Image (cartoon, rainbow, N blue to C red):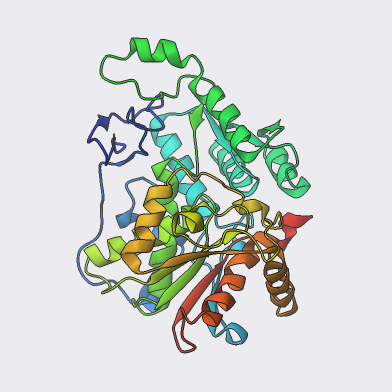
Length: 385
């Protein structure tokens, strides 16, 4: 039985189904009514059967495994030049950490009997959703910017999904996608007896990496893997990129659940990295949001988000963990990218934002030299072709 959805803001509950709303009538993002976690002590990493990848942690997930490539348990390697550990999230099937959320989101879609999924993306999430939809045998429409990278566009097309290229800003892409998802929204609202939430009444089910709680159920497995790979301990800090904040919030939710289950004791400081000119979280914290010349940067196209759907939750995660967020200009991102490539980490430019932020956090004294720090490398350099 698929888990129902609830609104943590107003308490409304929505029955699971292919026409379930993609957000609450009050405008808040929805969550699963179930919040499972296992009892007892976990096995050490060398005793864990990790052949199911991230689904090794099925006891934490309110979704059954239906669509998977057995992705997950990405390597965590020492990076002595950075005094950190890098978790290689770019070795997923589609070259992006977004596969964490795609496997759980498409598994949820299969549970609900969905026939078509719709997503909007700058490229990586769309390529991932398209790939996993193909694995599930479902149709997919992926809304992308008209200037989407060719490599990401080809991934979508070759998975037999339909790319819908939209002129304008990233927000325009989302608006066009939502129009397709909701379809005749006014008629749906009139027909509903208990709410006026935006139902999925149009061309398909909204497999949104920003709004759909199934996606965050997948990204929180990042925290479980980090803890397991560190002997069920917690690093001092994790430095992560923030666009929509799906990996950032996944880390927060995952470590929170581990604490609730009594598996670990304590939370890592969550330190965010945004691109100058696209830094709404930094702006909310009162920090500098442009580069040294007073401009923004377009090098990190994967996190060019000006209004994240879960902005309040990201800020809460920063506050609760004693974290922070900073914005990086083009020069430090390019410097970090070149340094990563020279050290054998072939990643895309957006991925370099977090290592660049790590350097800045150390320069600013936010992180000490001996702090145990983990940095995810989120996307493959093959995505830039």
